[in-house]
Amino acid sequence: MSTRIFRSSLNVIWLAPAVALLLSSCGGGEQRHLIQNKGSDTLVNVAQAWAEAYQEVDPSVVVAVSGGGSGTGIAALINGTVDLANASREIKPEEIELAKKGGHDPVKHTVGYDALAVFLHPDNPIDTLSLEQLATIYGDGGSSTSWSDLGVNVPGCSDQSIIVVSRQNNSGTYAYFRETVLGKGDFRLGTRDMHGSKDVVDLVEKTPCAIGYSGLAYANEHVKMVCISETTGGECVSPSEETASDRSYPIARGLYMYTNGQPEGDVAAYLDWIKSDAGQCIIMKMGYAPVTDVSCS
Image 1: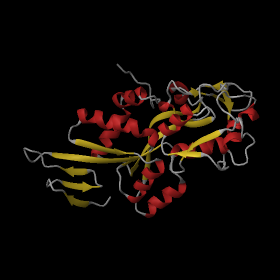
Image 2: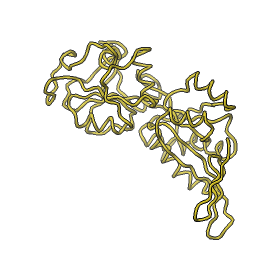
Image 3: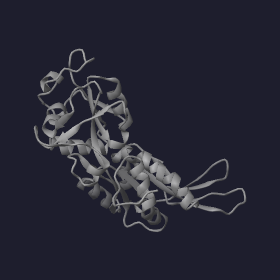
Image 4: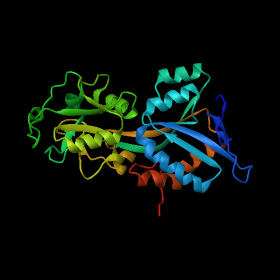
């Protein structure tokens, strides 16, 4: 990773984007280390919570967290401008090839599991949907354009047209939903593509005609989570930490951090802590499933 030096009016020397960040304290001489962490909006709140908690573990390390989507984080890793790239999807073969051409070696670290929940307005009478039905709603050329096509009438939805809420195409959530629900197909034209998971849930909450999807941690009492089955009429599974962890939920996925090569030094220590009970209890409290059984107070 290349190093550039910037000087501020406060005579603070920032070594960015390398791990080391030298800060002159009031007493002088204190050395602190910066870990640049960027990517998935699904993981951004957890990553911020980890970063804040780690200050108590090792005050000499500062973790700078930003979102922007899994694609943004992976692009930064390919360019060598981050130490940790957060992703809610696996890195693509073409992204690995680009990284290797630039002299980088992406290494995946699983830090949690998520159930990708499908949300409806509380007034929508539907409680269960299959992957097949979701494909007819979200897929290009899909047959379900109104709620009446699915055999229901949604109160407050004047013409019963389905408002299809999705994510932007640089989102790992978008990519995983497309892969799992649509296979190699495309999303239908006219979807409302939101910047973040919270935006998806907020729109569905306010829109009786809408359907949307996002990480389980963004659920609230103002939206309904649908029970999902593999096939229409089959047994459905509700999204939860447990069904994400055991992968019984049809749209369960891993949550990842990518490093350039095997991590060392402060980055290795930080990842070890994230995978420890302390770090995994944080991700569990944020609504995701831990990678191992943990004991939390």
